[in-house]
Image 1 (cartoon, rainbow, N blue to C red):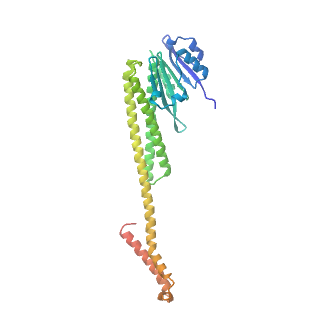
Image 2 (tube, rainbow, N blue to C red):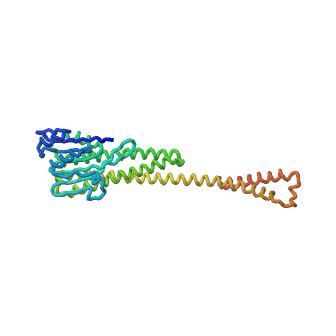
Length: 319
């Protein structure tokens, strides 16, 4: 299936921010006026043009997906390169998409493979700001992403509460509930990994000599926000573990109940089985075998022995 590609260029024109989706605009404006270049599945000519104008090299998808810390954040005297994962919710599933950022000459260059709602929200915010550069856009985008992640946490917490209520109301093990609990554990771990990654990136930026100092306070606030989200994720994970333990405990109770029933039934039928075994022996001299009341007496013994056993079980409150 052919992937949709797009380039969006945000640049200054007097005091107004102009947006264009035409690649040739880059050849008609001054590089000092460019604020943000957003690439969605860029084709070769778009990559080459942007690399030529900014004097940098775009990140490949393979590089963006690497998990090493050095691949997530790197900095030299000219630019900052950041690779991070953005979460999106589609068709009932959480999807992770790698996004690459380059901050160079006060310009933000973003490269991604999917349409992300956080980018559209950032565009709306940026167009209403004044005195904007690439660093400001990046922080607005990151702040918007954190807000959306908080919404994901609220959604997951709400769904976990629904599962918890179902587990409490049913009171009996349901295999589907265990599968849902496992699925939410996977989602929670995915969220945690995403938040930890953002926390590391923000911490790295705070140590940067390249990033403008006036934005540090805003970044510290975002680090606290991410820390709060991590606390909420940890709470959700503990809650899921508690639910899982409760579910397994219910399974143990149900299995013990079933085993108890089988044990009781087995014990109840043991005396009749013993009596039947005795009268089933092939000895010649067994007086009851020749008496007309022998068969009814044997049946009576069987019923009486079972009744006595059942009475003892009830008296001992084993049933």
